[in-house]
Image (cartoon, rainbow, N blue to C red; front, side, top):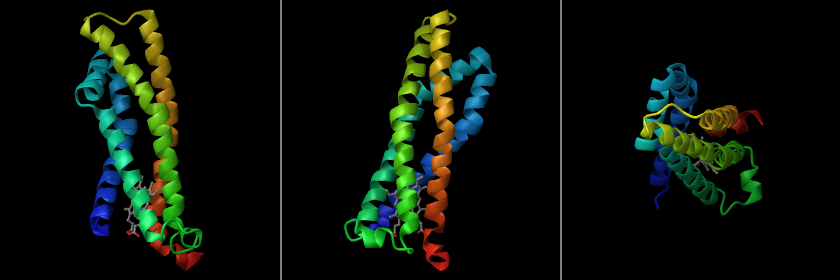
Length: 173
Ligand code: HEM
């Protein structure tokens, strides 16, 4: 595949991933929580009907796969002297941050959004309030996803910083 198209896919998917995660954790989720039962219906619609977490995971996976391919191509097959050269180091550090962030998001946060979706679906579809057990499940899964979400924000900030500045690292290193 032409490297320009790969870069386009990588950057477009990365913009959606970072923009989606920041907008969700800083604005959408706090709003959903502030609105009580209406907020639960809103959150359920977002993750169940609009498939928000699945779409986000797909953009993250696309970004990382395209990034790994770019890294492979631009480093002559992951040659360590190229990966750690000052002119390419920013992409390597940013790439590792992006891969770890996908790992945390995909293996820890995403499964918890599935628990939230399943639990909310059970009582919203029955048009009844949540049981105590469902309330506790929501609190636990939601709380764990929010805590890990902070680290996802940090990981993405590091990846964006490195990607955006990588071409200047050789001026200071
Ligand atoms: C949050 C995730 C990411 C975002 C927002 C992002 C964004 C970007 C942007 C904007 C560029 C263009 C930089 C420039 O031309 O100066 C770029 C380039 C690049 N990215 Fe990423 N990236 C992300 C994750 C990754 C990952 C996980 C990898 C690899 C594992 C990676 C590998 C690369 C490489 C190798 C380039 C340079 C391509 C070239 O020299 O043509 N990126 N990225």
